[in-house]
Length: 279
Image 1 (cartoon, one colour):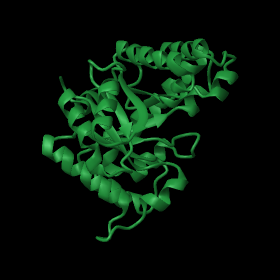
Image 2 (cartoon, rainbow, N blue to C red):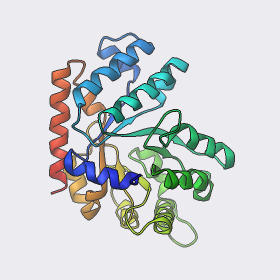
Image 3 (tube, rainbow, N blue to C red):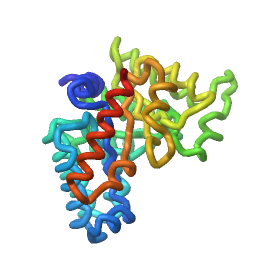
């Protein structure tokens, strides 16, 4: 099977590099006039999938908004992942898991790969327990042609104190993580590797040098729209890395629902902006 990176880069050319976030938060379900239960969640997902059709390369369901409805919500997560893949897009499950040893292997077995219960093509992860602790997940992703996006520089300002903290060698924590990702990818491929980085689209200052430490990784860039970043910001700040970037938008699009036509129009607009971002 082609790697996650290969599949994304191909889809980004034929569709759009846009990563559409499916974030069925309570306030959105209320805004859409849907019941606050698994049935409302399912209807929400049906509308989004109908509106997106075959326009985007990647869809990113946020697991927390499914987990909040218990076992039935998790059944909806598995169902929406299957619908995403049926439409030829890649499913990136946003779970930000981080643990050690067998626990992390279990998360990998649950979330990624064609034979996993949730069937994700990729997932997000947190490295707070150390990049080395992620090895079981990273290796399984590489073996399965899946992807993992490690949070390196988040879009929320609260993360900067930790992410910009300096190590003894003078590198920031974020840049050290970027270097670790680059080394892992280089150990398994000569091209763009299976391990990507979450780099907020709102980045500035020291984050620019962190991005330069990720020459062989995909970049998941949240923060467009509701958090203040624009596609123009990405084109300006990400330089050549923009060709490997998944610009992620959720609330900026989902706020146009529940009318399918309005939602589709918003998706098409963001798809066009994401294409122009690449030049």
